Structures are given as C-alpha cells and as structure tokens.
Length: 169
Image 1 (cartoon, one colour):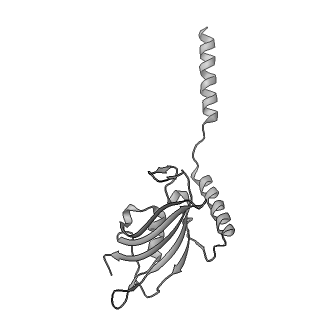
Image 2 (cartoon, one colour):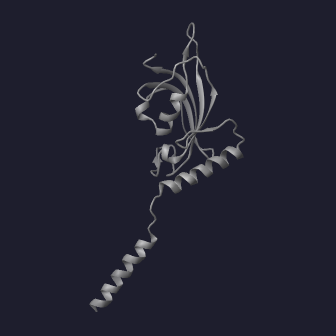
Image 3 (tube, rainbow, N blue to C red):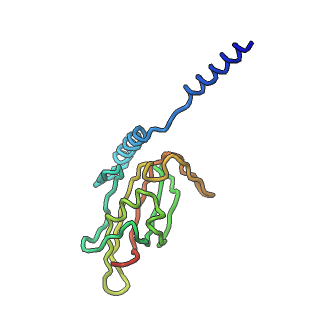
C-alpha cells in the first residue's frame, strides 16, 4: 500500500513538472519582434528604426535645434497608447510625468526627442511613434484598470508629443 502511494505521488510530481511552462525572455523577445514586424508591414508604417534594446520608433516631428530631455527629467506630454489590435488603453492631454515613473520603452525613446522654446507662448514640439516590445512595457504582468486590461506580454504602440520638460536647459 505504501508503495502505491509513493508511486502515485511520484507520478503527480512528474506530470506537474511536465505541464509547467517557464518564461523565457529570449523567446518572448523573438515573438514580440515578429509581431512588431508584422504590425509595421500590415499597417504600412514607414520610417521605423529599431533601437538596440528592441524598441521601434520613428520621429514624426522633430526640431533638430532643440535640447533633449534625460531620464532624470520630468516631461510634459500628450500621448495615446494602444494595443496592436487597435484597442486604445490610455490617452492623456498635457500631462506631467517624472521619467522615472514611465515604462522602460519611454525612458529609452523620449531622450531621442527634442524641445525648442520659440518666441511668445508657442513652441515647436517633437512627436514620436513607438512600438514597444513587452519587456520594455509591462512585461509578463497584465495591467488592469476600471476601463481596460493590458494583457501580459503585450506589445504597445504609442504616439507621444513632447510639450516640455523640466528642468529646462
């Protein structure tokens, strides 16, 4: 009888070990990169550059004479974030965010943007489009709010307008 319990326990351990899947960051990065390439092609998005981190971006509007924010700055931005299926999960107008509080993909991309104060109250701003692999977004953790859910391992598509940053240069 003891032998049957031991054998049964051993079988349970073996089967449970076989059904567990472990997260593999390299595999997920490849999956994300393939999704991003397909998305870019399907939506005829031109001018995308792949950063060494795996982030894809294109500077839609840029003033080359402007200064660039750093990851230690606070930025004022307007943005829209959506999933690759087109679901908009967040949009903000003229919100202020510490760079330390944003996803890694933003921390990599926003310093590519420039800001130039011009005469009067107007300014030239910078606009960037980002396609962020899951590891540089929310990773393997789903994000849920009252409005929407961002599934685990989601690739994110953002359009960001840099309105200003602090401290100014």
